[in-house]
Image 1 (cartoon, rainbow, N blue to C red):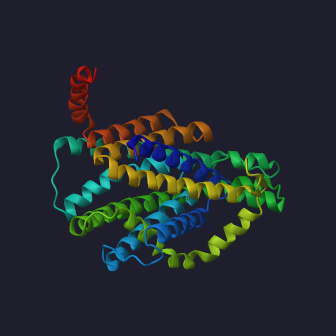
Image 2: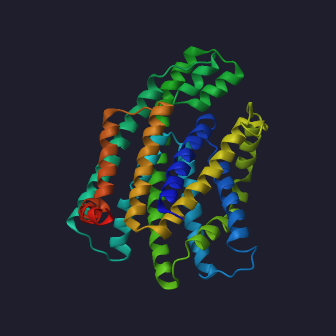
Image 3: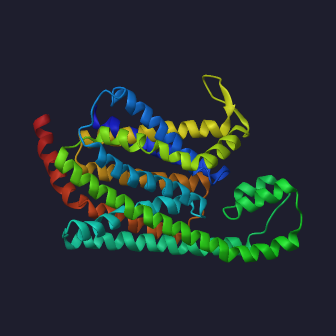
Length: 370
């Protein structure tokens, strides 16, 4: 497959996946478990049919190594999705996960005893500064939002426009309470509590970031020993954790019921009518599969530098779209932090050193083609 097609799959699949994830999270912030389970189940079924050949194909890498990898992968996926339920806005969620370079470098130095150039350390410093800037400004927004945003109990259209105490607002609306005086005092008490939940969300994202980096190092050692089997790893990483979702079954069932109670939606072209939240979930699962498949194809067709660059640019496009389309709060400081993150990421990939020779070769080759 041509690399341009793979790039299209990455941008189309990953960017649209973020859109449907936010549509789900805005209605039900605690739906991360059912989203993760659906993605795992779909990818596992596809891999069982086309990669494992209905269980008849033996894995190239010993299965015990996959169990270790799966424990890490399952933890990272669940924690990252659950962070959306801890006052973490989608832009901050995306920017924070873009800081995986920091965790990878830190663990590479500690575990693999690696040493890096000055430019690498500079890029990591930029990424760290960017994440700190966005995190600090988001912390101020969480506190101010929960201290000063009034509670509405009458007009339901107001509820989904607020980024703050959404669960409490929906509860008040369903109960029909109009006690604004008590709401005001409880809202002031809720400010510090909301900030503590936000801190817990930051801690969850930090843990997931470090665990993801550790998983990458573990995969690197496995691939060096047994060879690269990315598609096989993709299947086992999604199939083996499925029994673990039994621990989350009550939450998954609860949100399945809530999804079924959402308003009906007629799917264009095919004319099928189903609850709109199930449609969002279906599209999220499909786009997640397209995204992962695009990255897999890209790793087989292009260099690691190209893959890193495409994924970084995809994150940037997803971030801008999320801010503009969903009108997420984003200040000038957030833009500055975002610039630090992505410039630092590009510096880490040494794009500047690679573009010069590439453009020089392109200019020399152009007259020969004519």
